[in-house]
Image 1 (cartoon, helix red, strand yellow):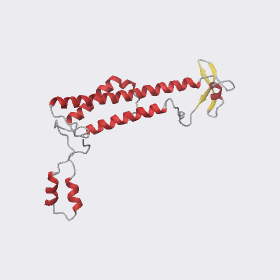
Image 2: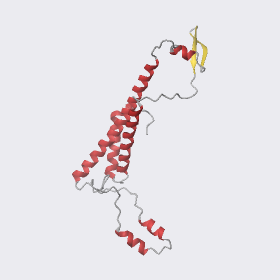
Image 3: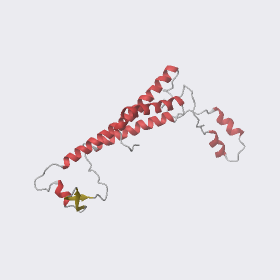
Image 4: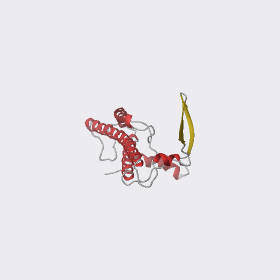
Length: 199
């Protein structure tokens, strides 16, 4: 099993011997550059030489695998967004637990340094309100029940993303279109659950 990209080494000796350049570095450097153009060859290896489709059915199966992998990637991004919302809701609910000897949250906010008392008037009725202005973003505390799970989900998302990137980097048109189709179908199915900013 080989994970190194295949290069045509037969032309390398001919290129380096026919080159009359004074620098041996430039003659070898130019012969090892791969052309970055899209190609439609069915026998393009995916991830290793062992995964090289040898028939039209195997090529179609590889493309279907890439579609499913891209759908899974979009589903994981949506799952993470839903989990983040759940964790935030759980944390917000935890803030409103009454504890003996502590001020209620409303009184803590009203007496905080960022609070300002103002008067609101609507339809002739005046009401005293407390306006709280946050100067900086609040960081949520590290929680053993949340952060390792978040890190695991992020790792899986990035790993699948890199696998999809490697498939696209083969410059095979079928693989490229399969990844795009999977992203489209995945976003169509679960895109409404994702956050506006993703990676």
